[in-house]
Image 1: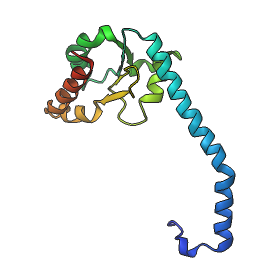
Image 2: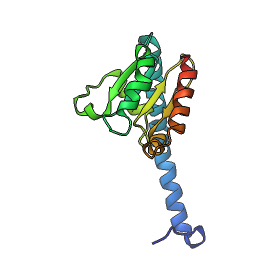
Image 3: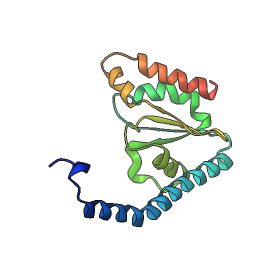
Length: 156
């Protein structure tokens, strides 16, 4: 079953769809506003409370990247980083770090990820997942490039 083309819609159908859009648009606008407000609140609370830690880093115990991350990334950023292990997520409590990860991390390619918070800037995310696919096949170039960009951005 395909999408109904606009030419096949009757006048009554068009009126019904228009009516539904009019009725539900305030709810959609409020939902978008609340979502953006929640993000702004997270930004402000993080800026005010994470004085030294401006990076949220999430990774897991995957054999593809665990050793590399613990050897090549974490030692250099751990003093300014809040670290979450995705493999231990069942034990996570609703902390600021978890709420920030759920909001800013997205639903795809979120592990491993570095999320950098700088006052009065939008967050900057560094998603390593796709790069580690290449890394697994012997090509560390993309992982090293993302790591370099992250380190340059946070001043390491």
